[in-house]
Length: 558
Image 1 (cartoon, rainbow, N blue to C red):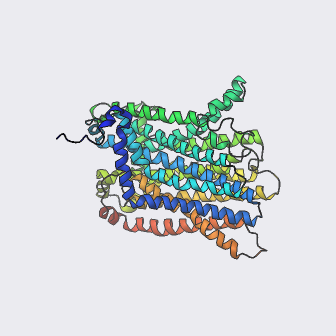
Image 2 (cartoon, one colour):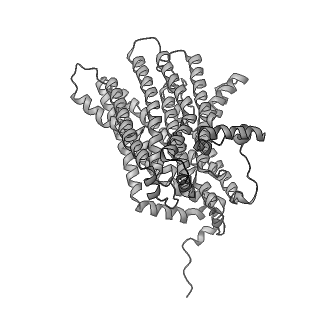
Image 3 (cartoon, rainbow, N blue to C red):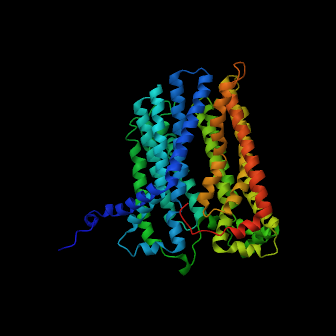
């Protein structure tokens, strides 16, 4: 009797569906993992905490139910979009480059899988927890619809727009991973390229109108390449008009995601070979910042070695010190443009999104950047055995830690200080000269964020260094570190502030000042207790013991 046909034999007639067995395997593995459910429940808890905090705050302000619904909807929309961007680019940025570093990508091509099959499988395998977390957040957008002030159509557009944003960021991350070898550079390039894709089309659309004088149709067509375009049409006072065809506006960015996946599949088949067989090609930034003069390179190396040997290990690239400066300079240019275009009423006017949301996004980027730079070198040395060689040198544990922190100060001290000073300047000049409540609240919020970025940057340098001794990947270090701060104080504020508002006497200044004061207190307590007391003390006193005791595990996807 003939043997039954294999389960997936019919897939040979549909090459695109060849990846379905890989998808089924990953789904079954995720269903058995406890981390999948913990992550989804944690995100839902954060979303519910934000909603509870907003409800208490708006109720104290005696806002109407429709105003509460609109405010809650816009806040959840920002939270969901921020999660979709930051989580997506980080989970796929090292998915293919890790296989190339370990030399296992070529083994996959010994099977009947092609480049696009591997890309689709990697996309599913690395994005399951991220997608499940978003599926936990999206139903919360229906609650403001029930409260009023938000239509069902807006809720559908918001849900589709966030899902489309996550898809494009996942595709962008895996595309960058196919052309990269280094984990740190791949993650950094994915974040920067994602910001360019989201913000660049808006700038190009406005520039098109300025240069060619065309109508808003051309600006809309160009701006629709950004996945944020359908979402910003839901925010009041952004452009003064709504998107013409909100559902069709999702199509350009969605097609861009599929183009990136197609390109990644083609590149994966040509870039799987190891680089050890030939000369290493220098990247664009290396050619830009590295001098061709041997004498200049020798002087640069000597200056770094004179500062500290670890400074040379962490900062051998001449242009690394200017990356953070360039990011801060770009934000300052955007704020200056907003000031010239809209005057001092940047908080209550049509450009409110340029101030607080952009500053918060920049804080998250800097926090992730500090965590990556603080942990990557130590993680690489643990995997390669270089940490044991450093411990055998004449450098003491304190010398190693001091050199590590000196390199971090050279990279981030100046840009973070300039950013904090700029936020203080915006706090006193960017919210108008009136004494109304919104301007006062905006001023104090920016001052609090300037204080928080200084404290969080210092705290994360110790937290990431401590976690890098025991955790295997930079993505896992980043997830734990960012969960401690800056997201830890936010969660504590969502839990504590409603209780304070409940038991506070009616004569007190309730609402926003209470919430902001609670958040600043939580930031100080978390950073002092976790970073200064636990992480700093354990690193300074037990660095060698922990480094010897914690052996690196097998590399797994972070």
